Structure formats: structure tokens, C-alpha cells
Image 1 (cartoon, helix red, strand yellow):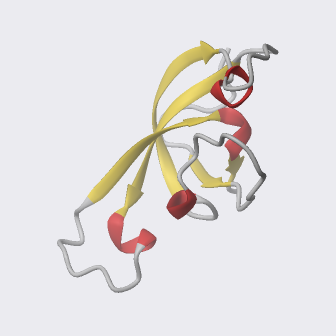
Image 2: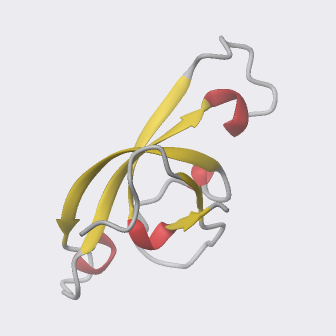
Length: 93
């Protein structure tokens, strides 16, 4: 069972650990909205080192482009969607 549902407001952890990290730097610390739950999968950050561990929930999260880049000149409706694992997401509120 997933802990987040579509429409949930989340923030990507503002963390910069060393190693093979799948969460884009430009999304760290940014707020988005969960769009979809994909299921639980092996953690690619551990798989990169041939390690296994508990599966992690994976979500599609939508971010407003203007929230990612302060000088963004495109449409205010422009968004970016990214697939982000649960351990990178903090709930808002």
C-alpha cells in the first residue's frame, strides 16, 4: 500500500549524498504534486552497487517549471514530470 495518493503535495528532499543518485539535482528542495503511483521497485541507488534491499514506492510527481527556475520565461502552465522514489519525498502539511 502506498503512503501517498495522487494530489498529495510533496517536497523533494534537499539532500546531496555521494554516489549514484537517481533524483535530479534541480528538483531537490522543490515542491510538487503526486500524479500517479507506479508500485514498489528495487532501489536503483542500491542496485547500482549490486546491492539489494527493501523495495521502494515509485511516484510520478509534477512540478511547475516556474517553481524550478526563477527566471523561467515560458508559459505559467508549463510543467515537468519526474519519477521519484518514496525515500526522496517529504509530505507537506
